[in-house]
Amino acid sequence: MASVTITNHPLGGYRLQSEIIIPRSIEEVFAFFSVAANLERLTPPWLNFQILTPQPIVMHAGRLIDYKLRIRGVPVRWQSEITEWNPPYSFADESRRGPYKYWRHQHHFEACDGGTRVVDDAHYGVMGGALVHWLVVRRDVQKIFEFRQQTLQQIFPAVTREAAAALTS
Image 1 (cartoon, rainbow, N blue to C red):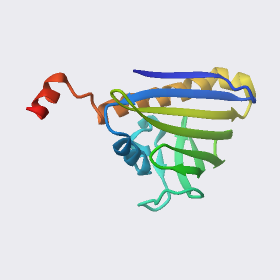
Image 2: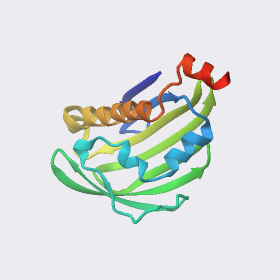
Image 3: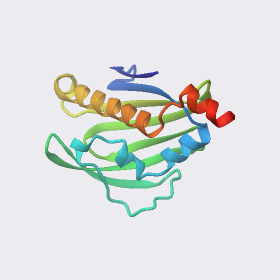
């Protein structure tokens, strides 16, 4: 199960909600998301996304991370701050400098039947308001998170019944 929705946020701006179940333990999934370099793997290649902060990056509340990317060919610098760090259940990042008027992205992890439910909940605003969001940003953000889900499914493929049976025999 995977889904991505974008709606108006009750506090203004927009809300992206994305959910996927990954067939792995919460500890394994959180460990993957704890490695900042994996964000490059989860970002579509057409954005030319690169982490500028020297790696490895030790994640914790207050950690600043610098990136560069290209949005529709335009070079952009982005800095985010990890504002919450609650392993293995959640973390949040907020834009300190970047292409959005504001961006707060909460990542939630919950053990469930079938593995770990990963929920992305982002509250954001765009320069240029509703028209720019409708014409450009909404579609781009939707595609980015759909790419993220597809990539997660490739990195963490479902275990087939045959493979599971082979592991237990």
